Length: 206
Image (cartoon, rainbow, N blue to C red; front, side, top):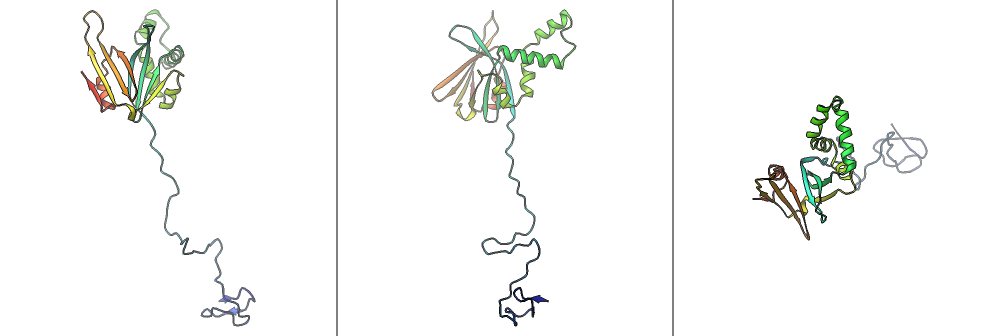
């Protein structure tokens, strides 16, 4: 039974106006129900209000022991941390050395107690930086030292890699990262070609 919202008298369902007071009959809405309108039609079915999550930036490869020559003739050591969109050149500073050594000691508490253990740890020294960068996020690797710098992979026009054989000294690979208006040149004694090809389609090795 429908009732007039103005006078409260009963109204027959087929009538659009109250027969007692003449007021138009307004539909009675159920609790918590909102009317649908042409501009905002009622939504039926299930839907999600969750926005899609952007994929996390992950490390693709780590290329160790890149040496950058300075005008003084000395070389600074870098590890190259490459993701799908960035190339992070992480400098091995004294602070980074200390943090990597501390992490290595915590993971290997039995090392360093004797002479031969310390000698073995020193021989395997460069690996402690690989251990460290493998557990850092790209943002953490970039922030690890104020001397670190980054290149967007889309900026890199070409990566040149040239091998130099030397009979009396360790052989060298000379790397050159070419971007508009600048080139970054490094030297390494570890063959980097296989790793470079995984992340740089525009590499030229000779």
